[in-house]
Length: 93
Image 1 (spheres, rainbow, N blue to C red):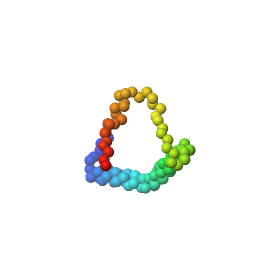
Image 2: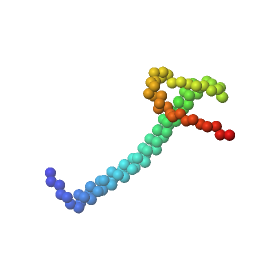
Image 3: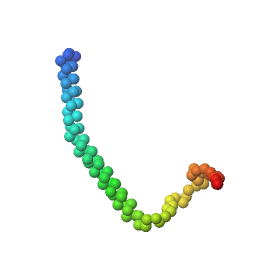
Image 4: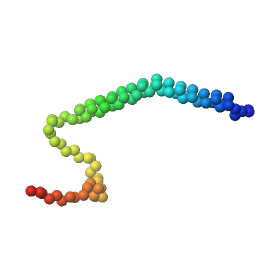
């Protein structure tokens, strides 16, 4: 095959590139709203699901204080130093 690098071939290539660009924009105008709506619906469903799970697990009265500990009882002494520094506060009168 022999291709000539002429002005006509350049224009044809340029028109094809511009046409593909505008075709892509037109398709995205149709698809993007649907895709965004679908994503928002999925996120809304997940939020409602998590909210229902939290409400079903939360059977305490308002004002009650509970302390929940992690089940990780095998924490080594090396991890304890990363908790924080001791700060000695002085009482101000």
